[in-house]
Image (cartoon, rainbow, N blue to C red; front, side, top):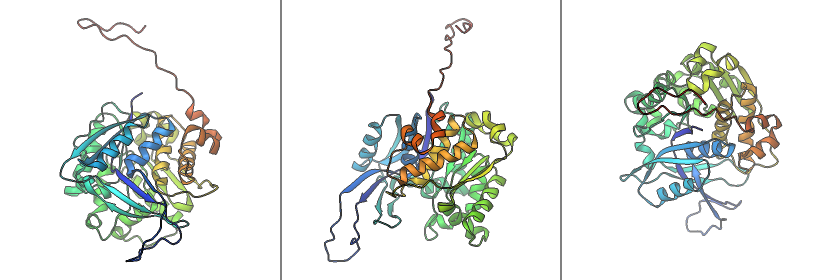
Length: 368
């Protein structure tokens, strides 16, 4: 099976267990719990979730020549279903985040961009993959140079090889350098060569709201407005995570989907002109919200890779996010318990009949 390629932003997440008394209080010793060390960012969150679901995944990213970079590489090497095509940059440290998630509160990130600052995708070879998923351009500033030319280039190269292209975003900090770039212009350029886009509503509001003069709107209405906008800019499949409003999935015409690369084109008629909303799945407890949006993306992309209907794909996306929020790995067993209808997606796939290789100096042999 040809691996799905997931490329872009990666970091090491350092997450201390914080009790109710945790606070920034100069001069005091604050007691906290054990430290959890794990991979973070789109490449890790989406890639590992895809591997847990059963996909073969190749990860492409940039790290520094340091201990954190070696931890990243070693962690990936120990996970089944994953291979790494990493680039080491000796001039930058490996990216990391301090994830501060007090009990009962949403998370806060203290983030160091590090080697992600020089990721351009120029070292990426997608080979004959059916799908390239690229994540977090707002945290990959080199992709945004020259009006987003490097971002467009890496997606266009994948499209030229026949791959379906997929893009995820991240929240844009208005006070940062990337907050001042022309996000409408960059996304119009990128979506001309992007088939699937899976941002959160917060991603879109922060990148496009001020630039386009879109006022604050109720979540459901805002998601619909942005979905229509992204489709008009060229996307074939738009899936927007909108918190408690769930996931909104909208798709373009059959002719647009038919031009969507090896993974999407065979589903063109089945997926054309879809519009549906899936509510979040209830979970017994909220262990974390970190990585839930990326898990949702993984569920959607995995369903696409298995030839799913758009309805089942959207529900698998919601179930995959729910598994992560509950603190579970999104394995087939976990997902089937949450969504029994997903069992068909995890069934063994038939193996294509083998064909003999051509003789060195003669015509190909007929299939056996």
